Amino acid sequence: MAVFDLGKLTAGLSTVWSGYLRDWDRSLRSVNHPETTRYNYLLAAAQLSRYLAEHSPDPDADDAAEDPTEVTRDHVEAFQAWMIETRSASTAVNKHKALRVFFGWLLNDEREIDRSPMERVRKPSVPAKLIPVIEGDVTTQLLEACTGKDFLSVRDQAIIRLFANTGARLSEVAQLTIDDVDLKTETVVFHGKGAKDRRVRIGARTARAVSRYVRARSKRSGADLPDLWLAGRGGRPLHANGIKIRLKRLGKQAGIKNLHAHRWRHTYAHEWKAAGGDTGDLMLVLGWSSETMARHYGASAAAQRAQVAQDRLAIGDDL
Image (cartoon, rainbow, N blue to C red; front, side, top):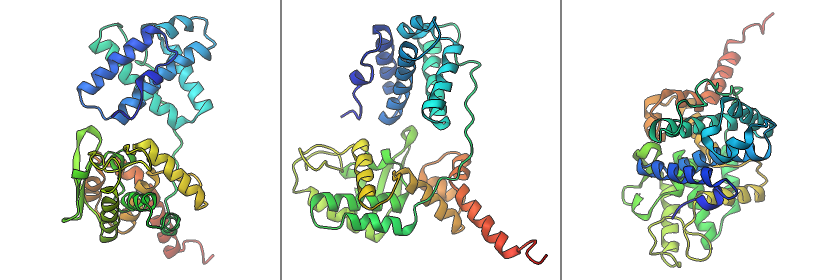
């Protein structure tokens, strides 16, 4: 079952834009792009189309709002600037990456354009920020917010412990199936980006929480589905967006602001590096193929180590 509705995503777009996006989605599916990646790519292109139709001050934007082959470099740069103003620089970067893929497809696969409008569009710069990690007592607060033997509490306990114990992506936890869980060896198989699978060990407490959930799940409507996570009602799978909403709700109950699954991933990398863990091993556990990601996610731990060294060296303290 798809995690997004392409009809809703393209609602209100011109027939030409909608047709191209449907064909592009088919092309993305043919090379096994994950659904979350497809959604983000398609959303960026749809947002560009809506911007051109509703917000662009360029009088020539009407043609581009009807047909993506009419989009120019100026249109894209204005869209990026609008994204920075209305969202954030990091969001604009994500849109830039997606649009490069879209117009590359129009150029190389469909041969509908002779030159990509992205050719000389620079990627927005993003100020470097240390992403806050989740302190241990925050996770404890969350677990306490969903104590109980009812189905939702048992399920949420298992989900939270998996995030904290493995540092997995939201999409990876959401896409788990019953067959991905091996409670005998206390491992789970995550299906990462780029169709890369990896088996990860889980701790005894996480395994116990998952086992409790699996037992509770077996008595629910929808127990015959392959998806590991079930919604509270209707015997339906619980997808990534449902988990995201649930975490926000639990965070609000526990008085925790801006709670999202990715913060546990940063926290995992932070604690791994702070404990002196090997970067190569961390890359394998978290499913990274580039050390750039390890450096990015481990930046907060590096800053913490630098502060400890600063306190130890005490340079200038004796003046």
